[in-house]
Figure (cartoon, rainbow, N blue to C red):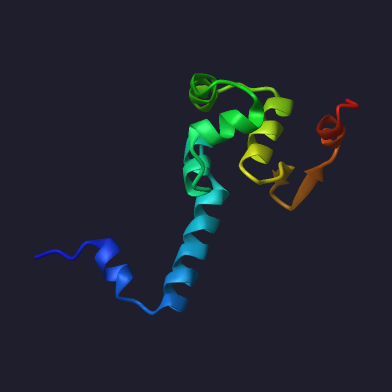
Length: 108
């Protein structure tokens, strides 16, 4: 009979459980859709909506979009307790783009 992952993890020492959760969160954060990111941060659509001062349905719609303003993305990430950084990756280097940082304070 197969063992459920949750059951297996529950039997591990707490320190190991925390390490596994931390690494899982890191992997999720490396590449995730907004919905996945919100769920990984254990936030509900209602909570994010309250922080953005919009309706829950608007958060649902936002999570399904494939094209979004940077200011909207930044606000959504901040509503989840994060900070948005834009990084351009090239074969020989990675460059953090800071041109959009003024969007956070409304002085674009």
